[in-house]
Length: 256
Figure 1 (spheres, rainbow, N blue to C red):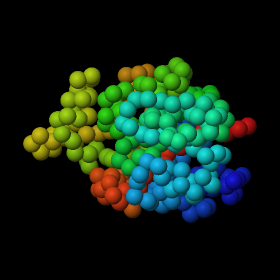
Figure 2 (figure 1 turned 120 degrees about the horizontal axis):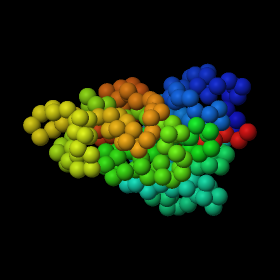
Figure 3 (figure 1 turned 90 degrees about the horizontal axis):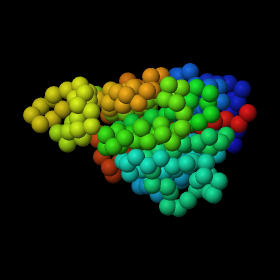
């Protein structure tokens, strides 16, 4: 389906439709399209993995094709979304926490509600990727796995950080601190002491640190908080598993 006001920019079309969804502000190539939904979308069902395709008809109206949905598992597997699309969406869906695409109109998608969605493209707009980055995935190397799957020089890669739980809300225990410290002692600067045995973790700072260490320096977005911005975002920690919806973050290369 063609969205309304097709001659306008994506952000202008969303605004004209009364949607407060987020369009990345980054210098991506013109053919690269991306957006992140808010809680004002058809994604409000209590979450179960198998509901991904049926829970969001409103989002589908803005995309050139059905997204390649993932069975996210807080791991580091990155799927080839072009191959999944070529053979048809599989059931069960690919178990992965990121997807990469090079073909036009293959929509990479991740679902989050406190974890960090990260979008990637190269400067030429020849490859895109979407990644679900919770603290476990970050510590295990999901960002680095996505960069490897893109096969683009890191210096040419742009990254955008979508809405996630903010550094004043993300209380964690020693297990989270230790998981990041073990691989990178400098990551300790991304944790602030909070109360005995607890720290406040900064997912955005951890992500920027890992991307910079990987050679990616064009990093945009960040600064939102899914937990504290109640009117804007779903939050797993705030609302609990039984009531929490998800935001979808998607990216694709438009056909020219």
